Image (cartoon, rainbow, N blue to C red):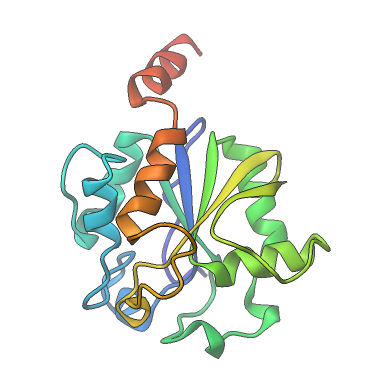
Length: 186
């Protein structure tokens, strides 16, 4: 059984993949619900979604051709370092990407991206931004975590803010109207 259910559908603009549900998110049953987590604000301020959502509205993301999942689905963790490599379901993520075929996969934080990169034998050094590898044929971009525990700007790797990273992703995404037209044609 998953800690948090996936919000996935065919042909999304982007799927965000976190490492694992935080303890607060697991307790309330919603993605990115921890105090001080800026994920929902960044999603809106970057124009990836056109309305401000809260963790309690996480099921609404698919309306905007956005998906949510985690690499470690069977347990929560207060910190990524509390997880072991056995907690990561890389093959499950690959299967989800094959099934859903989003335009982009955005790792929310380096831990999950590094676990996937290692499993593909690409090594353990993952930088923020566009990756040279794909997951199930889906293009990959790594974003800095918006967690309250990751608020230092010292490791933003070339961008001044987390918002700038989310905006860079938004600039790569197909327009929601393009996705809507594609979905209607199918």
